Length: 367
Ligand code: SAH
Image 1 (cartoon, rainbow, N blue to C red):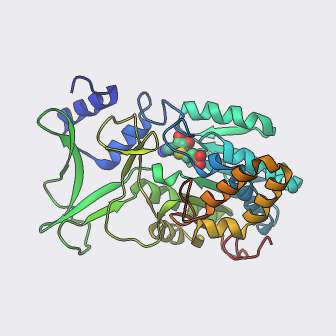
Image 2: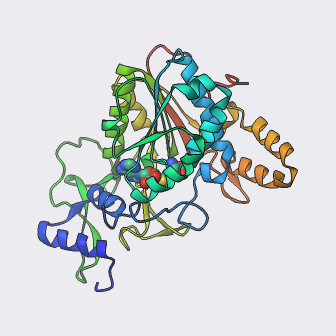
Image 3: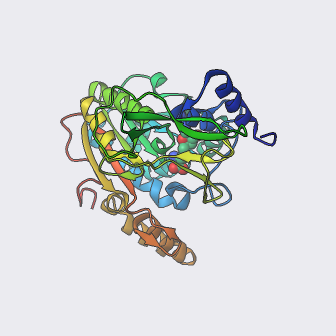
């Protein structure tokens, strides 16, 4: 594999020296290697990139999140100081749209201390540029751990799907971890650990695959611990399933199409669907109250997306068709502009005990 990417060569050398590596380690390198990782070397978003996200489809998405944040801040008792955190802010679009919409509550805007958790230097620069217009200073962190203590409002859109997962496959001897090793031509290939993992006691037919969101569950647990102890709420939006089960969802995406996850590490996006049931269990176990998961379409409609779409279309009739297409894409199960985000995408929240129902999880809260 002489024409392999620098990262593929580096991973091959690592496997040659130390033996096959877990899928979680492979994903962490492919996405987050400081020199060659996918997110570290590019801005992958938008029509000219590899994939597009809801805030990049329409300003309405971030605006609804802004209303959610302002209303949840009210439910928290309008603390004079609140730490607003976004995990994986991409281009910063969601945050800018949210803060603009939050102008309806100037006291909320004034209470915000903004912190962004982002590992990519390319996207950090992009976020700084985007946020320059809102006049709220931001601080950046590699992980949640360094965000200061205090009540928090957290938002994460398409963040958890980017966190590394592990796979285990059932054989007659038990659950074997799936590892990335080398084939005869020094290319990367999947194999199984020779010995089964003794800590997995599940029963399932031979050949079943168990996907474990090791990193995601750890992040969700620490987020929820923080919320349960210091107060606040978190909103997590992503694509995934509401019931845990066997099956693998690892996917590689490049230029809006599927690719081979072991080809060109560092040059294609790798994600896995979020197991919302597992996320909910992890956050409940940490002492937080969990709302949802709810389909994204229903959540956005409960926050008033339709009224906002009418307002935007009326303000600028020439953009009416675009607003309508974006509305459909965000809420429908499928639309002519692509697969709808209304159903595959889901929303879950964690909050401190004792709050009233969070906006978007019951109908008519903001209506
Ligand atoms: N929320 C944005 C971007 C989604 S892409 C949107 O909806 O458009 C995933 C984002 O998470 C990127 O900003 C990426 O750089 C960031 N990211 C991925 N893995 C991360 C990690 N382990 N720690 C912090 N940020 C991460």
